[in-house]
Image 1 (cartoon, rainbow, N blue to C red):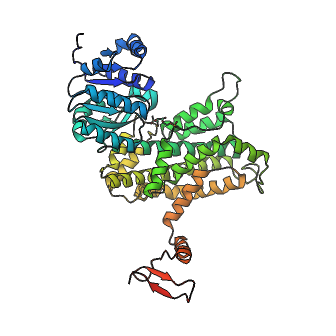
Image 2 (cartoon, rainbow, N blue to C red; image 1 turned 45 degrees about the horizontal axis):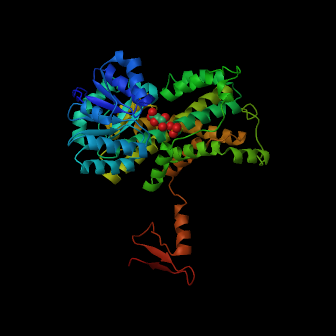
Image 3 (cartoon, helix red, strand yellow; image 1 turned 90 degrees about the vertical axis):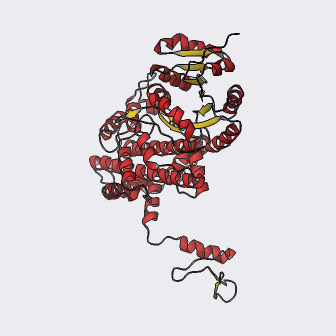
Length: 488
Ligand code: 6PG
């Protein structure tokens, strides 16, 4: 059998929607793209339907696919995370040569990426775990791409990825994030922030709907307006679309006929777990994951409703609380903005901690730059984050940047008011409220951690530090309660 010419500058394995859209994006941007799918029908369909968009080199075996790639060969895997990805990596490793580059474009767990990078490197090939954000539409028209892996791979791969990434102010939304798992780690935290961003929008909706008694179509208008200010973002924009949508089957607002149980594929959960492991309080992200889990606990929720759990004394709506509707809407906008700011601040803290833990040297400015376009959390706000890290790359927390601090001075009172109102109305605001507690904890002069240390020392002789002198101390709780210095 004749071997195909090696003409393709990039290849895509796995031609479900994300993979085929990515392949089309490569082809549309002047790259000759090799395409391969385990069942050849998908490959044939892609070429039949979109072959006129650019140069595709279809292959029906992995060997032909690899043979059609220019050296160093570059192949992006767009198959299911987990075992399917491992199987394709194995096939590619077999068929490829020294110096060739295997890219995993799925939402892989970064620890898997670290393992795979080691295994593939041991066989003389390069492995790049690349986070790709923007969903199906982004894959086709310009995603935000977060590649990790060896810097040599980036030198070869960079221009090709730049050719398909979203562009903001002339800058492509892609850059080398750091070695081995850095790209997938950062994509994981991106998704965690995405969860929090979606949840705070949900909490704002809930307050306007059931606190201010507004209809979805009215709330859609409010979100449209918010989208022209500080909150200008893809997620606010699509929220207005979803709220304005009428159910084609019944004519009711679509949001009213969707079951209120949020799904998840795991990236937000990974972010929360990793935050716990690193000791970084990503409370906004974790509460968002829990909020999805609680929403999906349908049986328990039904039992709780039927069990008539006492609600205490509640106000029926904001009018009963004497709150003006226009004032409330603006307060909710500010509370949303504040809670969102906290979620980003915490997400960047986690990235910093992860980067330090793994020696990745991730630059937060890069992230704020490449998240401005293409990805799900793209927002005007990211320009401000970029400026914050430009001014001070060592910012101890995003919220300590002078711009965000001055924003917070405008947000803090409305934020507190909204949480008080939500409590009086009996409406759940897990991220609005926990973010405020986080904020108040961060600025507190004294935390009850002193008492916790005392308790730990009481029952377990776990010792404590003192505010007035160095050393480690213990009280002889069960005898004369004298003070001993345990490190003396
Ligand atoms: C993106 C999205 C994408 C996907 C996630 C979240 O950046 O394009 O984050 O990766 O939507 O998997 O999905 P879940 O909400 O199902 O976890």
